[in-house]
Amino acid sequence: MEFTVALYVSASGQSPVREFLLELKASDAGDFAAVAAGLEKLRHRQYHREPLTKALNDGLFELRHVGKLNTRVLWFFMKGRRIIAVHGIRNKGRAIPARDLDTARARMRDWQERNEP
Image 1 (cartoon, rainbow, N blue to C red):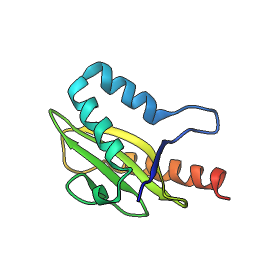
Image 2: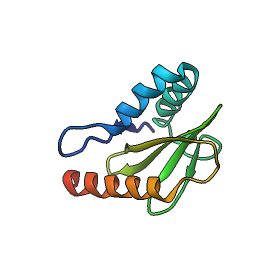
Image 3: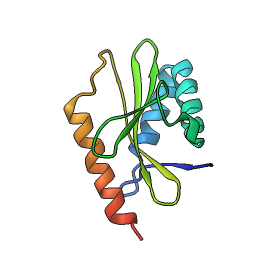
């Protein structure tokens, strides 16, 4: 059972997750490789659980990588076995800051409004 993984693109054509990943690749190639491998694993249902991913709330999930900093990519499911990555963060703590959750929720709503059949 394969899923497709896509990166959020705003109405103006920007892809903040792609930008996050490019910055991560430039600053920490090891963590980038682990996150890229994690995104590839999301194509397979058996990885849609801990320790790789964790359900948050409001339909959001996180792809998790623990390194020098905790790296997370927030994502959600869409119809047709699609996964949309909407936000990337790095932090030292375990909790995801409320502003980052708000950003992910807003992008999720935006994507759904523009892409629902």
